[in-house]
Image (cartoon, rainbow, N blue to C red; front, side, top):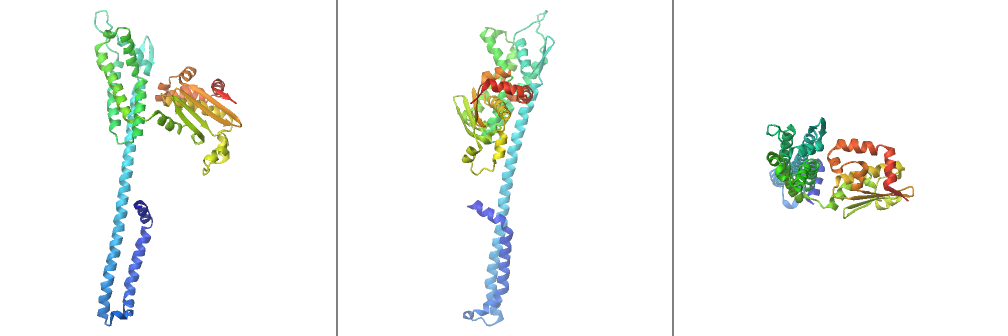
Length: 391
């Protein structure tokens, strides 16, 4: 009620103020003529009329002044309140952008890693993997002294020190729970796609009984920090974690064609998405929608549009939702029903990609997937023949 009153006063402040001033002016100029017309007061002399006028006019003018002052202060108060709110929103946006850029910068540092082995230069996760395989074991030269560490060792140990402050900054940031969760998920994906290799190598060596062969400086500078980061990420993520169904529902709203979704559900690691079969069916559920039939039909105009939707958005969802093992799409076009079922391991094998690594590397997504498969009609047709049934 108060907000509606404020909105009304703010919109009509000038009119209200003008009305009060005009009322006061009319009252002030007409009272000397009206008062003598009231015979029961017995006013006869100018002094008596002046006293009566002053006695009535002064309180009225004072009251009008108080009203105008209150309205002015009220408008100023609400304006300050709105400015403070907008300032808080801006601070949150700046904090989110800063944290997102910090994660991007960390990712760029990891992508810049290089390791040369037998004249072959390895990049990114392959660089970390080959480096760890070579340096976890103690190696000695002919004089019995340890070889000088590759510069990559110092790069990795430095990069690991950047994870913890970013985790702490996200945890303490004045952001919404879902915003913190999304940032932490991105950071976790970055860690798993790179430094998880360190723990995999260590686990392999322990399994083979070679744990004592791990260099002490490798253990203390890389292995222990990696384990610590993994535990911290897990603990902080648990505090902000959305349910798998909530994550699925949020991700579905961002896929292409989401305006035409009839239903979506997630159960036991399997996602199912169904689109409306016709414009008439769509209008039955959204009678107030401004979408016209031509626009709707253009979106599902031909098999080519359907193939792009199926191949691009199915892989995008599997990439973003690591807990989802299968995605099913269904859409009706020109009285034909298209049904696609895609499993995570089969998708990785078919496209020859690692979905986790694809998630954090936009260049890889653009070049190794979208460029090769989504923009190629030949590859889309092969995908449709393999995974989509038409009835």
